[in-house]
Length: 83
Image 1 (cartoon, rainbow, N blue to C red):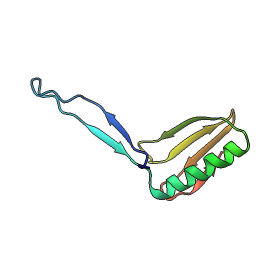
Image 2 (image 1 turned 120 degrees about the horizontal axis):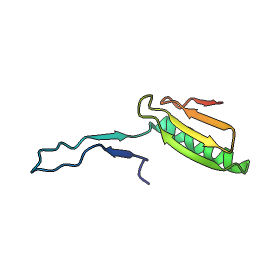
Image 3 (image 1 turned 45 degrees about the horizontal axis):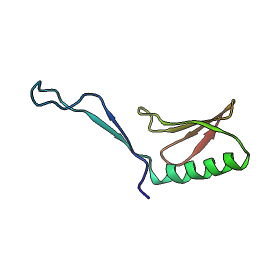
Image 4 (image 1 turned 60 degrees about the vertical axis):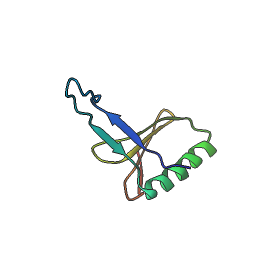
C-alpha cells in the first residue's frame, strides 16, 4: 500500500503561454500515519462517523472531524490532541 499523498496544482503547465506549474506535495510522516490509523479504528469502534480528514498545509498537521463535536489534530511527531 502506498503512503497517503496530496498534490495541489496551483497553475497548469502550458508551454505556449509560459505558465509555470507549482506543486505542493503533502505527505504525512510515518508517526502521523500510525496515529491516524489508531484514531480511525478507535472512532469506528465507538461508531462515530469520521466527517472530514485534512492535512493543514501550514502546520503539517492532520485534522479529523469526528461526529458533531470531536476535533482531532495529529502533529508531525505523531502526538494526538483531542478537542
